[in-house]
Length: 101
Image (cartoon, rainbow, N blue to C red; front, side):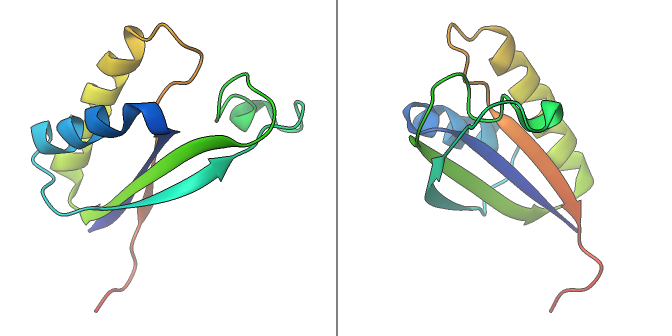
């Protein structure tokens, strides 16, 4: 069991739901968030919310699921990001879960 999290600007809401369905991740949650970017403090996350300054209306999707479904989601997101015409790619992270109830 792992926790997968996807963040993006709000405009990609429907596309992310479609990607989760294609990866056969049928149980997930979402939350509206504000994304901020202030300079280049950390190069690895400097483009997390794209090039705009200030708060961006963003969303985060997350799901507790297994590795095979997460791998499919990574492939789908990589392909989705290849065809973007904006500087706001989907971001995805995975966190292992040591214990759950």
